[in-house]
Image (cartoon, rainbow, N blue to C red; front, side, top):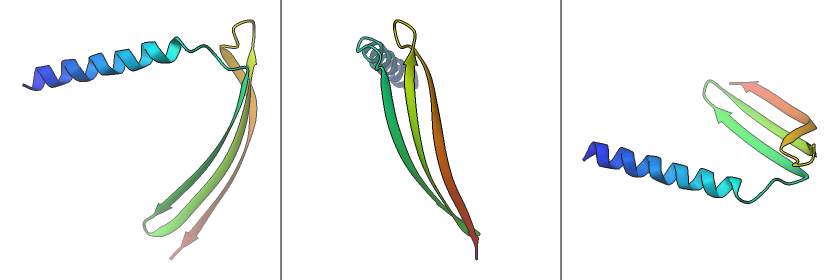
Length: 74
């Protein structure tokens, strides 16, 4: 039963990756991210990234980013 589950999981992962490559590459894109963490203190982070495609296929990306983070101790 465990072998069947692993085989199904691997086949689903391979189907997703094949479908992802068939869509092509974007010339540029922007991302924003927000992260929160708590434990013996509280940590937060916010980031922005912009990437630009390089070459004929735009497969490789070059870009810049900004990140703001903080930590508050209890």
